[in-house]
Image (cartoon, rainbow, N blue to C red; front, side, top):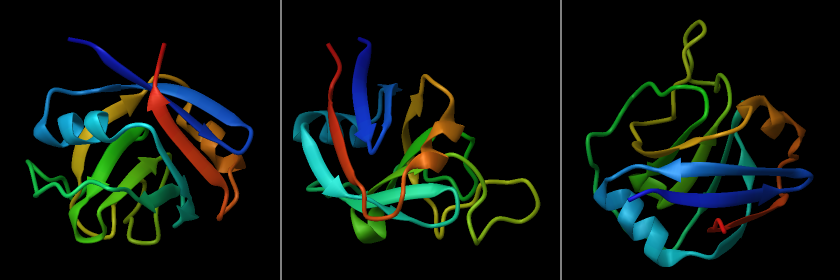
Length: 124
């Protein structure tokens, strides 16, 4: 079953596909979600009303991955290195559950300022 979401942040609008994990199921069921996004290097993150346990958590992720950060109940969009990265890797502050992948150019999210409103909803 393909589950697609639409992410709108400032002037950026992209779709992403969720994977088949329990974390993705919980996020899908919580949609729509609206929050104020924070930035940390080339990552946007924000708290969401989901409480998921670590699930095959990754200490290093790929560009365009969507991750859930269990310690902060946070939705994370990765589009480049973070302050914790070593070299060219993309490293969250601690391991995340990867639950989806952006379908467009992740670098578009460099245009989103900290504090911008982010809307996550089911794609048509």
